[in-house]
Image (cartoon, rainbow, N blue to C red; front, side, top):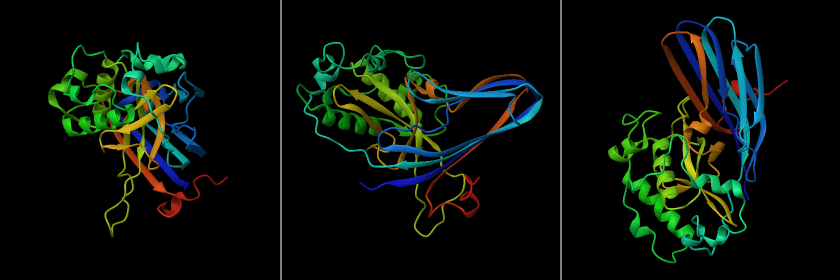
Length: 305
């Protein structure tokens, strides 16, 4: 099975209108290690230098980093560098029907771990809808294989929603996303998760990156990539299967997984509170380079020493 190595750079810069006197911040930026993905090297730079910082793994196994600045600062810059090995996920056979995989009555859940069941219920940003936000009844026919059903469902999400970065914000509520039928990858994932949970599936939100390729004959532009999001569904006795509805594809070796949780709020890359600062501007640059052929010369020694 072929393995691909990537260098990920994720740079976030805040420029405050007035000096911020103090800030407490929580980062969820470091990619996960799990079967199919191995994080080889990590470097998380924070400027100005924090007065304190510490890290841990949350209940879902995501890497968290808390840091505090208690001196006046007009800017804050957080930069992640990560070298990650990725292999294509193996797709084994699954003979379960979709009815066997939904809660509370799906019998495939009889011996499944309890943590997976948590993803069946409402979460802070995703209340359980009392009706479908888009038409899917025709996909869930009696006895249909679960993977076939979920693949068709992903395509329906892709076809039902228009990709439009101007349609929503990070905090646009689900009912507005359903009404507009437009948004970005976060909205595609949230819309899918809510409908799957309504039908009894355990589904979670996944954050990460997707390698993008430049047009033929063009160089890859620095900072032109972006964070990405999709969803995963727990098939009891089989595992979590990841679906990218924005691109209508199963998640593969070009997807780099950072974290997973119940919704975006669980895995926001950076969040925090600050004293002072006034209005602020934020700049985000993301690069996903295939190692070593796409990596710029000045980045190849980033982990040296």
